[in-house]
Amino acid sequence: MSAELSGSAELGRICGVAAVCARDLRRCAELYGELFPASPFDAAFFSSLTLVGAFGSPWADADLLKAVNRASLFVTGVDRLFDLVAGSRREVDELVRDCLEVADGAVPGSPITRFLADLRDELATAPHFAGLAAVWHDQLRLMLEAMAREWRWHEGGERPGYGAYLANADSTGSTFVNVSHWIYTGDSWTLAHLDELRTTVSAEVQRYLRLLNDLATYRRDVSWGELNVLMLGVGRDEVDERMAALVRSANTQIEAVRDGSPRTALYLERQIGFNTGFYGIADFWGEL
Image (cartoon, rainbow, N blue to C red; front, side, top):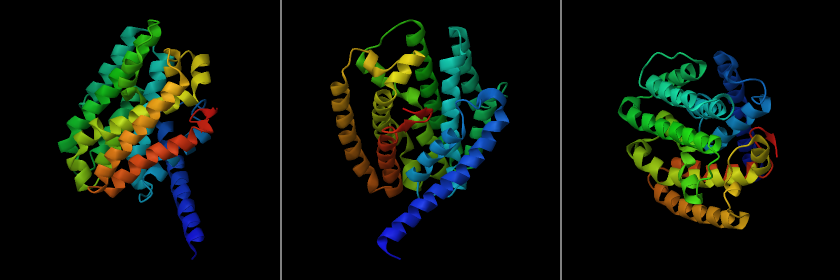
């Protein structure tokens, strides 16, 4: 088989895995009632979400991608509750509290906490989860607190500074998804360095993805009334320069990871590359 045919076959295999995952993820979403309404959670959404996981870990089959896909779906579900459902600070605080309590083992009482409990239980099937549960819980906390902070900025009409906004990139959920995926599938080096990975290179990639998403979805964010870096008195050129610096920094850190775990290095590289290409045409809620 020629190199071209071999490469094409590999692309087809990855897309096939993503298709299997998309069907599974749609069935998963149906278990949680109105948490994932048909609009905007349509077939294209599930397909797009699972393509990210399949291309990020091309060595994995559909079973090994369960955690990354379900963690990604959880992030979009809880983010929707913050953005479109929560109507008061009390509701926001309760959402954060309830999720953290269920992550600790409390009985779930809502669709989003049932989903979180099911995700936690799936991760618990991984042999190293017990020793890494505190790291996972802490990353969940960081994500939820960042989402709540963003809600307060928006509802209070506050415009944070550029640095504070970028420092709140945990609201994207990218590192929470990474931590979930690595606990579920990570090699011994990745598991041994999980806390370091999430606070260094994963956080750097996450900041890049925060800005990439903002540039791609500015018009939508204006129409939906959501915060965006371009609403903070920052010009597009300045954001482009910061993104380029973040990529350079992330690439340097990824190279340091590669000796310990080539798969984890590839995953992080593909997070940057896949999303850069994807957001040039569409986002997860439709065409731009």
